[in-house]
Length: 334
Image (cartoon, rainbow, N blue to C red; front, side, top):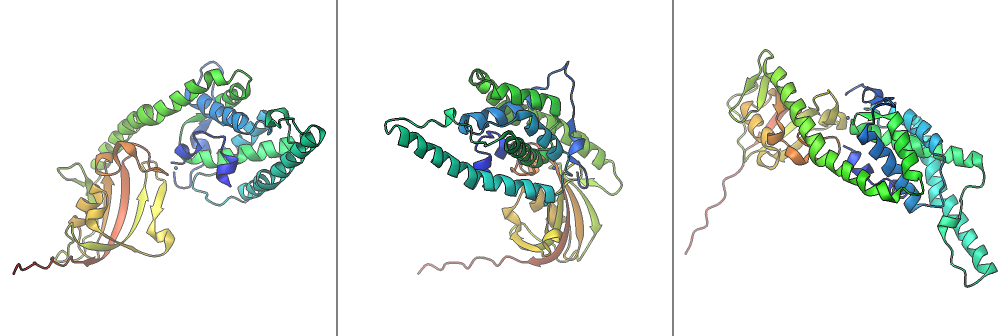
């Protein structure tokens, strides 16, 4: 369903990349009319242009879309299930999966009945029956957008998102579309990685000064919170059984075996370098906190979802068990 609703949003999947207990508002401001924010403008432009281009019959009220987006952006970033979002999502699902499709078919049949040689063009159609429906769907569309985009942790300005939406819905928008796309591409491949590189370096420098934190030659920072059995420490080729919690520098928990309610097992040499190195520093039954520079984690590419390019990571890990790798059997040649 999300693909149907967001067939229009060119950059939506890239933006699903979020401070624990924080709210979306910590990354969202109103913005200043006197100083354009290119990122927010490009985001808004991409939404409206993509919608208008892919679904010309869905003539949204962009002021209502912005109102919905502003409300959706304010939802706490760590909220995964929001009753209001569930409600608007159901509204959108019904409209886009059923109502819109049924109306387009009816209109096309009517056109063909009047003139069998006529060509049905969705650009000539307004799928909404009345302005009340238009406003309702527009608000829901915006709320769904804001609810999802809030997780990107991008510094967005609602004024310039709105201005971008207006520009993207204009008749001459095609001329500026490439600019918006080029900017979004540059943001994710150049601007954001450099910003995160500086942010991560500053964060790790502060962590390094904390009591009990040590640093390896590779740049990995760690603290032994509970030593465990030093006689049973894993090697890279061993399999470990662990519970863990992964955080970003702003405190957002992006992954946790505790939340899932069960530990996980994996070969230690099949994970990011920071884990492979760090888990060899603690014994069975112990607990360690790792602060992993991007070059020992997911690097300049990031990992999609919540982990952006050049993002340093924090992991609290409890080592429950070590399954020692069995040596490969030697093949005896006859």
